[in-house]
Amino acid sequence: MSKVCEVTGKKVMFGNNVSFSINKTKRRFDVNIFKKKFYIPEEDKWVTMNVSSKGIKIINKKGISAVLKESRAKGYVK
Image 1: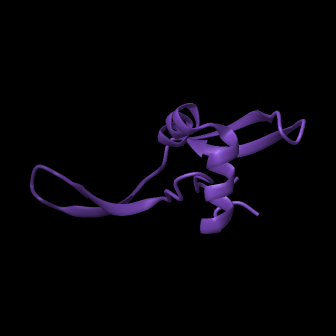
Image 2: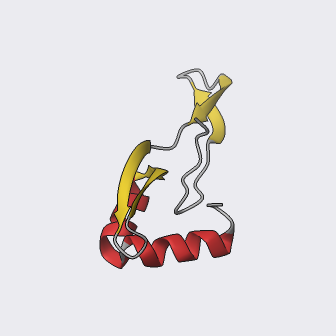
């Protein structure tokens, strides 16, 4: 499962762990991704998506149909 949100397009970021003596080592900042099923009443089917917690809030606010249309336009969903 790739760590990319299909609603917001958020991805893994890279940065540094900084110790007390200011030594820097590389680290990853992973996105909070969930595999979640949503029901689309217009198409009468279930869709499984990889969404972040922010993406779930956007779906609750706008609705799954509007969000899917936007995601397809941006190229996040096939």
